[in-house]
Image 1 (cartoon, rainbow, N blue to C red):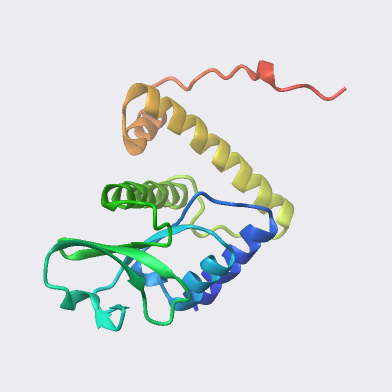
Image 2: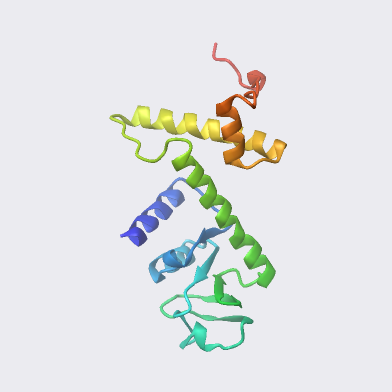
Length: 188
């Protein structure tokens, strides 16, 4: 299942020594298995929750006011969390020091990550990749990530969207940046 796959990826990230500031995910992945694993790993998270989740035994949607902040225990979760309601949306974190605005600001970064992966899949050839060896797969990923990084840096400088900048490169309206690899040491 997607939950098991996400859990496996989190475990691999931990095995590689990663220690994220926050793990961000949408309501689909806010399953007890993932949340409890993050708590056990001592990783902080910010997520959105579905309205049918239970906080201290009561459904989130049963709290009638459209804007509130509560600290409590979600059903089947090992530790307390801070939950906020903002209109019809519910957000949650295990970092009890965060306030409403901080949780919402951190959660917004998830959208940038989603857009990056969408660009890599749709525009940089990650979708439908077929490779026979790990070496060719690794080379393709490295080259596309490098190209994506260059486009993102230039896009940021020119204040254009990724798609508009990429279309300008393809059409020839924008000249590709000249990269000077002076900071890269050459092998002897």
